Image 1 (tube, rainbow, N blue to C red):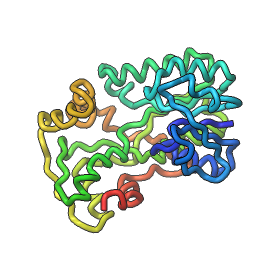
Image 2: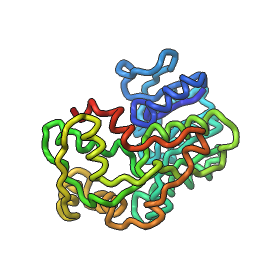
Image 3: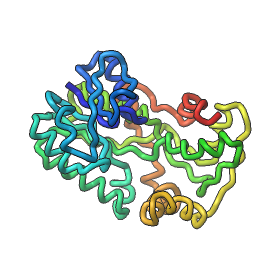
Length: 277
């Protein structure tokens, strides 16, 4: 039994579909509302909430392998619960900032979860992705309303990763031997700037999308209102204010692990064009 947490999310949903397509199983997806889960036929939907570890007992029953996104709930309690019921292998989604920006608070928190997993006695595989292509969804409202996208660091290109590539690496780690005890830094196949992302979305939806570069102070004010000052500073440092060669580097990891090339941002934009129309 493989349990996928975050099964209705960008990574978890793609992972369930891939696992189902390759005949892995039995499969179980964790969701807060099983009645609304649209899983592939034969995938068991089980209700639970990572923020409430005691709610995970039904979902964890009989599970051999677990896909877990870090820092959604109390990870120490979640990993302890998994260990108690005999989970043998955990594939954890952490962040590349553990390597590139270890001084930032979120990176330190991700590293702490990695250490918890390594000390748990369970076999592990750690995935450290860079910026998600799906972060561009924050612009969807403005684009649908035919407003300009406003973003800082317009010409700083990060090797943004398609969430489905993270799912593909997770699928291989969950179903094939040789990935226990491995840590994979994951990026997309090429750097793509915010300006280029907006251009790709415009191409996908078939109309122009205006772009306005804003300064860090303006961006910080927008983000801090939603996430708080510390989180806003961390995001802005990673997306352009404190970039370094390690963060900008393309990692050739997805293709060797999965056997398929990494998906470029323009593919994500084409696949999700309807959200922006």
